[in-house]
Image: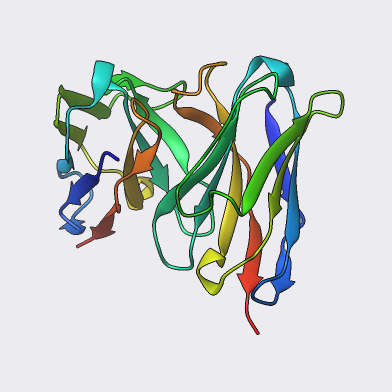
Length: 121
Length: 107
C-alpha cells in the first residue's frame, strides 16, 4: 500500500524558514517523480514544485522560485521542501504527491494528508 | 502558463441526477494531459480521471471524462450521496496547473 506522510509544518514569522518532509512507502521511491502541492485555507490547489526520480531535475512555480528548494533522499525514501523567506501568502496545507511515472509531465496518483504551514507575526 | 477555468463554480443537484462539470483551458492541452480530482472536506484530493477520459483504479463507472484541445468535461451519470464534493481539473502537459474547482452540493 502506498503511503505518503508529511511532517514539519508549523507557525513561522514572515521572513522565516521551515523544512517539510514526506516519508514514502509502498513503492519503489526512486522510480517516480515527486511533487509538492499546496492549498491555502478555503482555496484551491496550487502546484509548487517537482523533482525527478534521481533528484537531478527540479522545477518550481514562479511564486516560490528562488525561495523554496525541493530535494529527496532515495536511501531514506524521503522528500523534502526547504522554504526560506516565507511570506504570509505561503500559508497553506502542503501536500506531498506521487507522480504516476518518472516523467515530470504526469498526473498524481497518490497524495499525503498534508502538513499545515502558517506564516504569521 | 496554461490557465484552467472551471464552471460552474457551484452546482446544486439531487442524488440520482446527472452532473456535468466543465474545464476550459487558455490554450490547447497537449496530448490530452488532463486529469480530474475529487476532494472531500478534510481529505486529500483523489485521482478520478487521467488522460482526459481514462478512469483511475477503483473509480466507479458513473464517472466519465471527455474532451480534447481546450474543452474538457467530467460527467457523473447518477449522483450518489458520497459524490458531493469539490472537483478540480489539472493539466500536466505544460508544467502543472489546476482549475479553481467546482463545488458539487446537495440541492
